Image (cartoon, rainbow, N blue to C red; front, side, top):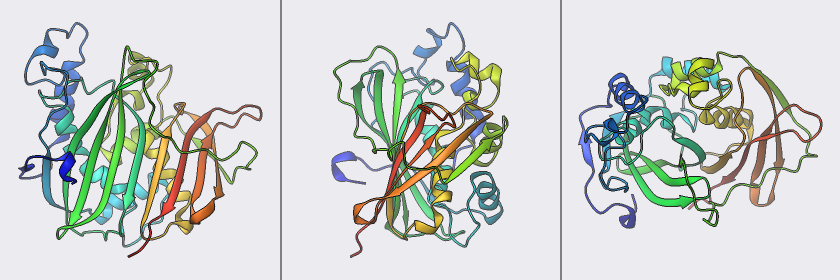
Length: 311
């Protein structure tokens, strides 16, 4: 982790936290009339100062199990190999991310946060069963036209070598600053680039992805819980959509690469989406997920994959 982004040693946990109590804490803070509850120091949103916690969290020697990876691959469309998909360290580190964002020092309630962008850098493939040391930090609280944004940084090392890193852009919706600068986003392929795949998504996709990822945000699970957060029906996980795109590009992915996506219009479940990709200069690939409408289909995801220079 860069020195400018980390000024104190990380607090090391003995193991990955259990997700059930973390969701309980997050759900308690999100109850109607929880303005008083939100000021309690043990609940997310209870920090007196609207600032991100300076604490970083660390868990060592976390390894992917082959059966769990196989289940994840089936839901996301990957071929099961001896190495884990590039999006799978996000799943392995998810309880640590939840632990940080559900702490009393975190300034926002966890439920209701929106994942609007994600950048992953894989420095080399990671073998199934290879132990990884994870660190998580929340950085760069900043104004956004639609509220307040911050970066969730996750790093994975093996034997002291940085092998994988992720920067998720998270939005807390609310009164924003219309003139606030937006983060650079990948440019989607032109609309006339033909789709190379179309996928029909079942209504239970959110529940199936939740079962293999641990991400049980209620906006993905059931129509009733989705409506409670302002969505007319459940929506697909953003990280499922990113994983599904990478699965479609498996034959074009080098050992070391960076892949950045911006999540645009939510993908309602059930539904249909189309995938399109185009080659770009420098060995890059641009890709997008759009709706099936023949005229002016909604853009759900825009992304770009770029090989890393070796050496």
